[in-house]
Length: 405
Image (cartoon, rainbow, N blue to C red; front, side, top):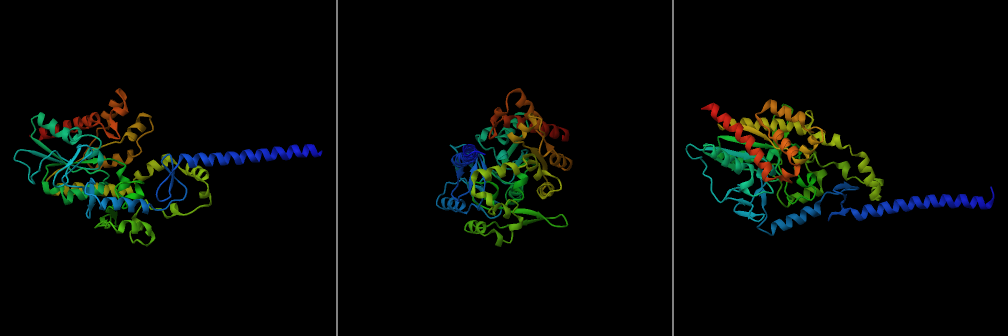
């Protein structure tokens, strides 16, 4: 080969290598510029955690410091449930108001015993039961009270729902507060994603960037199938960041589903944000990841089913009726509208076999097809979405009550 030809080959090889390196450098730069780094140094890209992770100790420490220097946070520490609404507070422009017991309500006090001739209904659940994003009068609990009274049924609905609660916390709120109000009917809002919360104790591991810096209790299933409560009382405020910083020495670490030691290990590809992102995307089996927590043989589903059964038994021991209200999220309906199925269908069917389930999902789907999904949600339910849920519950309860007369 002539020297000139050799130079051309070398030049072309260098050009290819240079172009390749330039593309890598450009990709790395774009990923770094478009991503976000939190106070603990954890990197995320379009909401997805990327690369080496460390427990968010700094973030939680800062959140706790703010919490301890103010008296206006909506949530406060609770040794039994993890957190609960602050009594006598009004937030979100007056849309969220809580009475002396931390119950979302209009400015009123509920007597422990219902008035003679009044049907008392108690609601338990997370933010979809609490009615996040809408004023009190637009929650399905408030609408239910209004609808039943309009039908001539003297009813009082008390909303014990709390934002960010797991099903276990809702059950404990029934035990520690709700049952003292002697309701005739208990409605539990089943929001399926909370199956994950049932196997979580340190919320910061489950919900990155959380504004709730507390730990929560959880139940585990012993070999004989009985539920056992752990992390109760919950970690004191000063212990939360210390435990997170030293998870491997915490005696309950094996029960924290969302602490994966391998996830916090350093890998050689973590030196590159772009390469780390590629690894995350290639290894993320989204359909399997969505369905996994709801598999009937898995711990989250087994704990959930046992928890709901115990919830019902305890309600019935206190002479009340127990109903489950299925509360699908916007993403759940979106999957159904796109014919991708319900990720937790098997679990929902099993719950329906064991419990009385009120299911507004068909009505919500019809409304989404007739109008739009966005008309039913504004992160949580819109007034229209809450109205549909109210109508479904009202029809079933009114029919059931009429049959008993």
